[in-house]
Image 1 (tube, protein in one colour):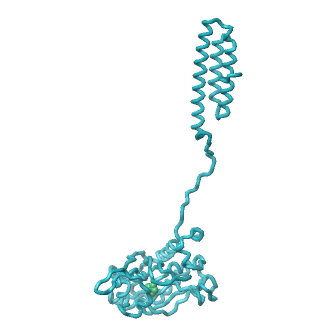
Image 2 (cartoon, helix red, strand yellow):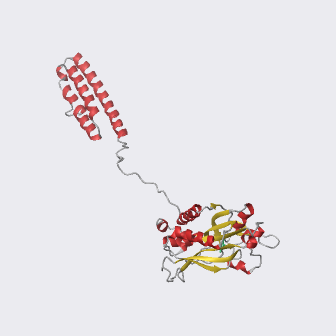
Image 3 (cartoon, protein in one colour):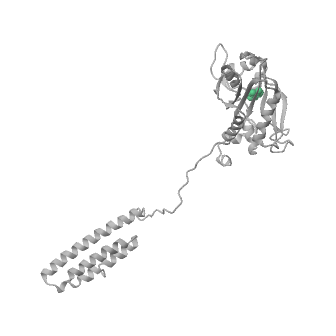
Length: 345
Ligand code: DAH
């Protein structure tokens, strides 16, 4: 075999072997085997060069240079391919088998979750959902609910007034309850009405385990022909059963709210002490809403025929319901934004 033929075979072998080299180490072995200066096949073959005559030496020399240059170029190209395929950047391989970094999905705030459960329970009983403004007129928040100016009943709600005066009076406020929506809805609708209104309310109050200056309420209003105290109690019992299960005790007690007659407060037995009385509940019961039969005078003010239509209303504290649902001992925890707490829901 002539030297030229041998060079051609080496080139062929080298190109074939290069395709089989799959990583950095194999490339280096390949380089040593074919192009290595000490015992590479090309170098070995050229050991016979001095035995050739001048003209042959020139052809063989030129050919071997071509092969060497081309094989070096092929090596670089192959190296680039391998890097690309294994996502190597420099010497820092990226381990594609590592699990990905999970994106934190977040979750609904516990009060939002409880609110959704409450609304769903009433939706299933045929109630619609409506909303109203958080900045409210004195007119809706108090006056139309039979709480006239200078009436002592206003003391039941420590009010945050807006910095806005008209005729020496302050007619705008942060709503202290969702009850103004009873009026807003009756102004615009004819019976039959069955509606729940969720929303934030604000009070100028000191906080403790069961009070916050901002809280969420769900107002309820049903006005129809023949609504009796029995339907009122039945609806709220059914609600309590759906949210707290059938074993929770529910207590109705007479209470005074100017817009209902009779009025009631509705409590469930305390989740913490099972009704024995503790630091959270006091007497074994946690009040979750005020309620009652819509006052006749309000129905008349709304232009309804109060001999034909009757109704009931309630205003529920969503944080109070959430306390009970989730065995939380302090209402203030809900709004401290501590993820260690919020992640438990
Ligand atoms: N709005 C009252 C409050 O926040 C609660 C209430 C009592 C709402 C009786 C009602 C009701 O709809 O009938 O203290």
